[in-house]
Every structure is written in structure tokens, then in C-alpha cells.
Image (cartoon, rainbow, N blue to C red; front, side, top):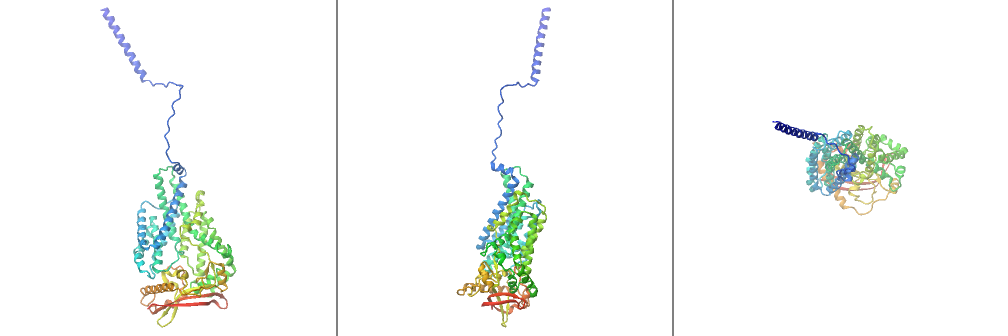
Length: 585
């Protein structure tokens, strides 16, 4: 029993020790293992390789500036493409209606993704103003012109019927979605180009083109911002401060749009500088007040009913003409500096409006669309008048003042004025043999052309001055000879082709008039958006005439020298006169 007992106890002790060892082993396994210090360095951790292109990394770091510059570059490219396509359409009128349909379709498609940005309210204000002006212009500039080329008219007729009302509707829609701004703008451009082809009379673009092209610039700018935003997203360009980027892009495009308009003034000033008489010849020698005498005999002076009053500025400008010339040209050239400050933009734009209003009151040349556009620019700029233009974009609009003439229609109004004129006009002949001078307003949509008709159809007869009805020319020798009434005259045979063109035009014009007369045989041609508005006071007899009594028109060319003095008043000395009769029934 003792042996067994001892053995049993021994066995029990062995098992106990074995269990204790197992418990200790488990405890040791449960304890955290302490790192053993080692003298060997750990292998370096492998960094993730950056495969981003250096250009994209640079764009990410400079995103607000890059965003603005890229948006402006795309806007400029769109303007270049527009100019190229516009020129092509002029020679291919069969594509004008499809082009307008494509414009409308694009506007509808882009109306959903593109909205007015709230960051720069001036942008929104100017877009809406231009769309409204173009819509109103499309309404009041209704189709009123002679249809000479019936084949071309058949191709563009939908533009004047359906297209006109679509443009007006889109002008209203542009208050909600900016993409619709381009529809009335494109309509006005296409409608005017088609009018030139249908009537065979080349109408100048100067009076209207700044508005639709500025509207297109602003609209293309919003398209470009959308495209650049999408492109940066696809390229995974990060670190983009959306608010700052949008702010800079909108401000830059807005200022460059104004710069494009300012280019009309700068390039006109530059055109005066580079005249052949030298940089100061226009300032020192040009007699701008001769335009007042020309306006009197053309019947455009607003105060023509009171010759003694309308002549007062003519006499005053004999003393301060050089000063006024200097102020005009300096202001035009200083636009390259004015564009860098918002308050300067406001001041210069108001000055130009004052200049346009003065020109109208003195001569009757009415830049009414420019005046409204300038007031719209001022109204939009007032909302950001205290805004400091960032230095990174401040001077870029200067380039657009100088270079936009390469890709948009920019006016270059620089010439000499003289008192030697060649007056082109029509005289209506009635069935009783009485004759009435016809005002330019009578020709509705092509009335503007009657102030430079020699450039449109040429001078069909010899013996006439080369100057037009305003006495304009681009040679200082011609100006001096004209002022001395010793101007050289044209020489050569009668241009039968030019006369045939005049005959086809006046017969088509008379047919249009006959189809729109009231019961008394009269028509209100004065209520129309003319550029050179003839004063109804000068043509009261013709306005009262029953147009059904007209049997023929005389195309009259008068080369004359104009003058004014207190004893004789306005004086016209005709040096050479020719007439061509065109029967209309």
C-alpha cells in the first residue's frame, strides 16, 4: 500500500508539473513580444510612382489662371471659326438656312448644361442686353427690300419668315439660358448677308456688326468654360478652385468682349494716324465740319428745318475743329489703356456715347445701335466698378483691341473730309412730268448704301469726282484739291453694266413699294431703323405724293462743291451732272 501510495503520489506530482509548464507556456504566448533591437537597418519602403504628366501637374498648381487662359483660347478659336464659316456662307447662300437651323439646335442642346454664372453679374447683364437688342432689331428690321435675285431669295426666304420669329423668341429665352444669345445674333448676321445678295446692293456692316459679334463672343465664352471644365475633369486635374477659376475666366472673357468693341475705336484712331498726309494730318488739316454741309444737302440734319441753327456748329468748329479732332483721336487710341480698369471702361464708353450723339445732332449720321450697346456696357460694368482686375489677366484684353481685326469685323473709320462731293440719288417722275427727289429712307433695308453708292455700283459716267456724297477720300492731295474745288474727274466710257444694275434695282424697289401702299397711295418709310436717317422735313412733298403716279425714276449724279456763308447760307455749285431715266411702267 505504501509503494502504491508513493507511486501514485509521484505520478500525480509529475502531471501537476506538466500542467504548470503548459500554463506557463500559454501565458508566455499570450504576452506581447518585445522587438529585439538590431544593428541592421530596415529596408527602405517603396514609394508609389507618380505617372502624372508634368504639364498636368503644372495645370493643377496654376489652375485658376490656366482655366481662364484656356477658356479664352477656345473662345478665340470659336470666333475664328465663325468668321471663316460666315465668309463661306456669303458665297454659298444655299447653306444659310441650314446654318441657322444648326445654330438653333446647338442653342437648345447647350441650354441644359450651361447656365448663367452668378459670380460676375456684369456678364449676365450684358448677355441679356445684347440678346434683347438683337431681338428687337429683328422685329423692327422687318424684310423690306427689293427682290432682284429671285433664285437666291428662294433659298433664303425661310430665314426671313420663320427664322425671324425664332430669333425673336430666342432673344426672350436668352434671359433664362445664355446659349440662346447666339440665335438672334446669328440671325442678324445671316439676314444682312442674304439681303446684300438678294438686292444686289452691298450694305455696310459698320452700323450693326459690333453687337452680334460681341454677343457671340460672350456666348462662346460660356461654351468654352464648360468645355475646359469637362476637359480638366477628364484629365483628372485636381486642386481646382472652382470659384476662383470661374471668376477669373468670366472676368477675362467679359473684358476681352469689351476690348473687341473698343477695337472699333482704336482701329479708327489708328486709321487716321496712318493716312498718307502723316500722323497729325487728320488732326491739323481735316475739316470735319464739312460733314455738316454735306448733311444739309443730303437731307440728314436733325435741325435742317432751321438752317441758321444747324449752321451754328459749322461756324463754331471753324475755330475749335483742331481741338475736337485731337480729343477724338486721343480718346480712340487711349482705349488700350482704358481696358485695364473698370472705371476707365465706364468713363471712355460714356465719352464715346457723347461723341455718337453729337455726331447725330450735327450731321444726322445715327450710330443708334452703338449708343445702346455702350449704355449696356456701362450698365453692366457699374455692377463691378470697384472690382480690382487681377494682374495675371489685366493686360490680356489689350491684345484683343489690337488683334481682333484679324478674326472679327472691326470698323476702321479714318479718312479725310472735303467739300467736293458726288451726290448719287434718285428723282421720281410722275405721270404729269413733275419731279421729286427721293429720300434714302424710301429704300428701307438698303437705305444705308445710298451714302456710298459709288463704292457699290461704281460711277457709270465720266467727268465726275471720285469722292462720295460725304466728300470722303483717303488722300491728302485729293482733300486739298477738293477743298479748292479743283478735283480730278473720272474718265472713260459709260459703264453699261453698272447702269443695268441700277435699273434692275430701282424697278424691283418700285415693285416692293407698289405692293405695300395704303389706300391713298402712300407708305411710311421713315419708321424704320435706318443708319443715315433722312429728316422728313426735307422731303415733305415726296412723302405726300401718291406713289401710284410715279412712272419713272431718274438716276442722277452731281459732282458739286459745297459751301456756307452768312450772306447766301448753304451753297451748292454743281460742276458736272448726268442723268439716266428708268421707266417703271
